[in-house]
Image (cartoon, rainbow, N blue to C red):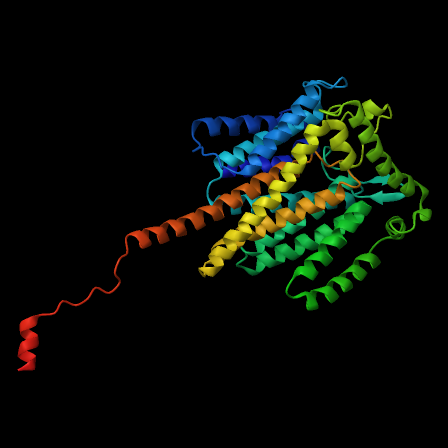
Length: 429
């Protein structure tokens, strides 16, 4: 079952049916999901992974459903945002009921990074062949597909996925594994440069320097990161440098300044939509219809209140809280195993949870300039972390159970040697 899920993951991330149109007519993504569901119903061993984050995902799905059903601007059959989110929910359900072992989780995370690497590599190749968009006076790289190819969204996705190299290092055993990691980092940095996304560029800098500062090798890594930032800057074209300079000087490019102001306006317009419908909002992706401007909010903190209302705010806050609660639980279990001298048994789960929390923080940062509330990352990362929590909990529970059995039913390690009285007497004689 794990390999069927991996296959769908590649179809979802790379989306070859959007690249080669003849594949689109075959509805490959839909047919593959139907096949996986049939396999899940018939031959898969099903066991639900229990975690508090399941309730958060359910609450978010409930708020999405209410917002769509009660919206005057859309309905449940025409809302692309709602239908796509329900697809993410199906994937979440499949992963949470099919993946049970840590080995399967390792395959899933490895496949996630490999699939995204292929997607980036293909997109970069198409850019070199002349496929790009010219926006705000800058030639900008886009994704090779048509659904998630926006330069800002593509750039954010690349930054969000970079922390997942941390748990993969745990699995590296051969030299070519490290070659892959270096290639992935270099390709990500180059693609982020070429997207012209200011938020992704800032997010990359934030990720690199924060990773160096929290590392125990910070004295070596901080100068390296400073040198790397200089190299990154001087490998940019003049147009891209001018665009990134607008981060600190908006007078360089008036259109870039208008774009930044649009994000702020999206925040205020989102809360105006909340005032119209404070409980369930105006509906997913209905921000433009409600304001009459036709534009999306371009701000997470205006998108969720305006489109999902108070129910959506509560659900999203609880989801973010669950990410941190799970991470805290994993940290506690790791420290417990460390005291037993068994910390190597759970390094992968700890690093995976650390990567997920880092990515969630990046999503929240990017939310200041992007409407990323319905991204698949929220749901996928929730499933990954819930599985990591389950794996490490199982190890801790096994050790505690063994300790309790040894306490109640002690087994003597060295039974006493029985004494033979007559031999002792003979020896004394």
